[in-house]
Amino acid sequence: EIVLTQSPGTLSLSPGERATLSCGASQSVSSSFLAWYQQKPGQAPRLLIYGASSRAAGIPDRFSGSGSGTDFTLTISRLEPEDFAVYYCQQYGSSPWTFGQGTKVEIK
Amino acid sequence: QLQLQESGSGLVKPSQTLSLTCAVSGGSISRGGYSWTWIRQPPGKGLEWIGYIYHSGSTYYNPSLKSRVTISVDRSKNQFSLKLSSVTAADTAVYYCARGDEYDDYFDYWGQGTLVTVSS
Image (tube, rainbow over all chains, first blue to last red; front, top):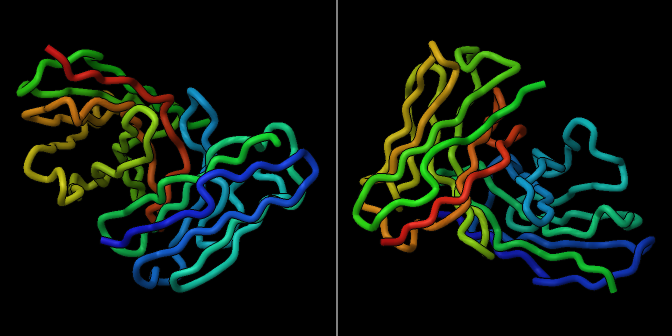
């Protein structure tokens, strides 16, 4: 199975700053079948990005995804207060579908 | 707006079978192309895909759980279900149901999740 490793584990930033989250795969993710989710405490994950770079419906354009092969990035251009949460990547190119362990974006 | 809602026992004894149901509203579970999925999250930990069922009834399970998992669909009630047998404390988690996209297996709609605790 493909193992996804997210870095850093925790990102401490201030509102207005830029956040860069990484997701590395143990083997190439076919056709860039990679998604990103946001999860807030006590809530279900919310889809942000699919296909490595396509924003899901209703997601603000400050969220962007990039990458291919084994290296993927989620960028939040300017952090809003509601963006402080845990972010997960997920690959769906090779069964079983797997998730990264998460990156927590916290207020500095 | 599609909505998913999990229900079932919140406390299961070790070695018994965990049973959960996901009721789907705002859309038909029989509509072709989508997968209906179970995902779990142990307290304070990450997400694990359990498996899914297509509208056709075909199922796909995580190999790590395959020997203990059954996912089924009840089209008349517009719901799908999860059974996980021989549970241990390691199966304690929040269990989510979700919908897989029509063309690819990312998850665009999620239930709120339900905590299942395995304890005697």
